[in-house]
Amino acid sequence: MKKFLAIVFSLIFALSACTVAFAAADFKCPNCLAILEDQKALDKHLNGGCQVAFKDCKYGCGVKVSADELADHYAVCPKYSETCEYCGEKFDTAAKNDAHECKILELAGGNETIAGLIAKLIDALKNIDWAELANKVIDFVKGIKIDEIVGKVKPVIEKVVDFVGKIELPAAK
Image (tube, rainbow, N blue to C red; front, side, top):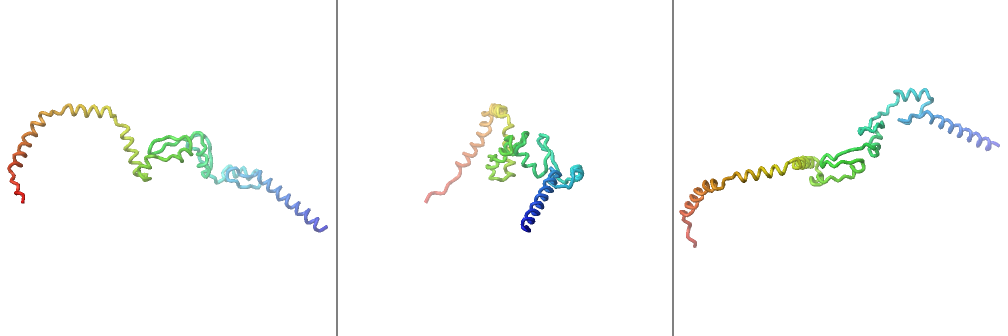
């Protein structure tokens, strides 16, 4: 009989502990998961007592999440948008951004400083109006007066040839 009573009291104790645990779960903070004693305490906690800092999604989807969950949210945010700072490729998911193997960074041997310089150089080259540059070179070449240049260079060449002709070389042995 003692064993039977011990088992009954053990079951009653276990069930009452479960009841308390389930009742407490009703007063659990959804933000920091703290378990509070009653609804009044939960309301007070939610209206200024909870220390979990919430951040707005930087992509403007309207979600507010704790700082710890922000990275997970960005992985699935429907308004996610990032651009590679080196090559300018755009990504609509964090997974694509993370998987991106930037060719400019590879060219720089993984050095982000050099990669940034290469990216700036590429941007500058992309912004050059190559047709305009070619026309300027053509106009410059057309403007060169070959006869004048030959006329100025010819006397110099003649003096050099005359000077070299006067040099006596030692006889071969």
